[in-house]
Structure formats: C-alpha cells, structure tokens
Amino acid sequence: MAQDCGFPSVESAMPPDDAVANPVVDVGNPTVTVNRLVIHRLGKDGDRFVPRLRNHLNARSSTNLKVARKLVDEYSRKTGKAHGQFEADVANYPVQTHIDNYYVQRNCDFLAATKEMMDTLCAKAQGTSATSGGVIFAETEQDGVVHLMVAIVTEQWGAAMNADMETADSDTLDLKGFRFAGRVNLTEWAAGGETYLSFLRGKGQVAGYFMEFLGCTVSVSDKDETLILKDALEDFAVQFRLTEDEKKEFFDRAFEICERHRSKRIPVDLEAFANELWPDAPQQLTDVLTEPERKLSDGFIPDRRVFKSFVQFAAQTDSWKIEFSRDAINRDIIFNQDETITLKNVPTDLKERLRREIKNEQDE
Image (cartoon, rainbow, N blue to C red):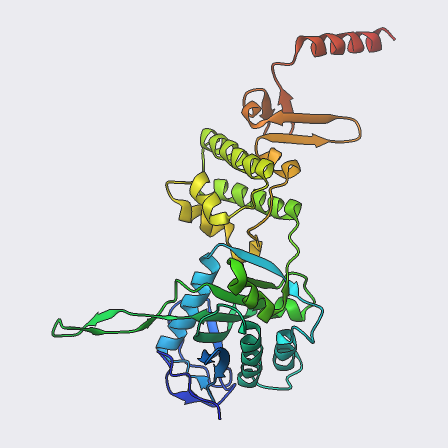
C-alpha cells in the first residue's frame, strides 16, 4: 500500500489533475503558475531505497505554491547545471517514457507518472551513497512554457519563536541547499527541440545517479558554450552600462581568465568565474550567466577562437579584412554615425603604398 510521505508542508489533498479545471488564486511570483504538485519521499528499508508515495496530489495551498516557486527561483539561480536531452535508450532510461505517457500521450495522470518515476529513482540510487529525502515533482508554467521540475530536498533543524517569545523546534525544508534537481522543458521537448533538459551537475557518484535517473545525455561543445558566454558578458556590460574603460577592463580580465582555463585545461565553473571576474557583486554576473534561456553549462574549456574576441575585433569581405584590439576603439578606429569606419594613425608604409596606387590610377 502506498504511504503518505509525511513531509513538511503537505496539506490536504485534492483529486488528481483538476488543477487547471479549478484554479485557485495564485500567490507569490505571478509569472510562475504551479499547475500540479506532488511530494513523495525517497526512503530506505535497510540497505535498499524504497519509495514512500502519496495517493493524491498535494493541494495548491499558499505554502505549497511558495515552495514550488522558491524551488524554481533557486534552481534558476544555481550554477553547475548541464544541458542536454534524453538518452535514446528508453529501456534503461524510462523516465522519458513516463513523461511522454502523461504529457503527450495522455495515457496516465500526473500522479501516476510521478509514481513510476519514483521506482526509477530508487533503482538508480541503489548502491550509491545517496540519502533519503523528499522528492518534489512540480509542473509549472511561465510565459507560455511548461516545465517539469524534480528536486530532492532534505529537512534541516530550525527554531521558531511564538507570540510569547518562546522558541520551539521547527524542522524546515532546505530549499536553498538542495543538490539534486532537474528540469524538463516540456513545451520544447514536445515540439522536437534539441536542448530541453537540464540538471545540477554536482560531483561524484551521487550526482551521477540523478543524471542516470533523468536519462540525460550531455553534449557540451566548447565553442558553442564559449559563444554563449561571450553573448552573456556583452549583455552584462550593456545592462550595467559599463563605461568604455570599465568595459575594456572587464573583457581584458575575462580574456585572462579564459586563457588560463584553456592553457591548463580547467573546466569553467560559472560561480567561480563570476567571483573572479566581478568580485564586488558576483551575484549580478551569476544571474546573467544562469538565465534559463541561455542554457549555459558549466564544465567546458573556453575556445580561444571565440574568447579572443573579448579583446579583438575582426571582420572581412571578399575585398578587405580588418582586425583590431578593443584599445583601438575611439582612438584609431572610429565607428561613425552613418555606420562607416574611419581609420586613424595609419602606418607610414601603408600610406605610401596607397599614395602610389592612387597616383598610378590617375596617371592612367
């Protein structure tokens, strides 16, 4: 018989999948709608992991909605994510089948799909150093895009103060410190997209089991990730209105960091990268780097063909080629309002060659 997970913040249940038909007043961040939510528990029986399952969805109470939204916010802000797609081997990685049965084929409801996924989670956790915890499944919608988020959260001890200023034990969910979570962009996946799945990369065997559970295959292109990083840094410079001098210093430092990672073959950790590049307010840069639509993964080696553009500009057509450093902008290279370029401080030998060329043409 399925057991109630006994997890904090579990409210009275409601019939499965009637969330959309009978909406409740949303609380918290209005851009994130929580369509369905259920909390199971990853339990242990001796050395074996066993699922502790609810028989109904969790109510969309004020507390539960806040929990789901908090998870979405914290997940979006976390670095250390990898992006990819489902493994082709559905027999050994069946989570995608359970999601397909629910979201695409409509062969089962949300609750049934999550129970099937819990069996897979327990199977993948066997033989690892994973620990028990609550498993939150939330279907959310934001800006017309539907996501399925799965997160394993643990309880931490706390203390609460009552009206008489007395303290009492109060176990709470660790909604910031969770290490195992993944999210599927259901809208993109159903439309045949290529990069619709993300998860916290983490370290070691435990992180590996959660990746195995999701059935995620990650194909990180160093060049593609460096291009995404480049775009993010340029957006950051615009967003925070860096002056020309500040922008030069910012990109010079970014180049140095990337060059060190490339030469020593050190994979990029976005949190450490932000701390070094923008030390006075690293979270500002982290927030830009981890914007969900960027799908920027940790763990890539910066591609010099891309990051050299942090300090150099280059372009060419069939008849000319130009390359210059950021230092030259507004000094030797003037970009005019009519979108033409003026070159200053032209080398003497080039000027002499041009004079002779023009003179020869005139003589002819």
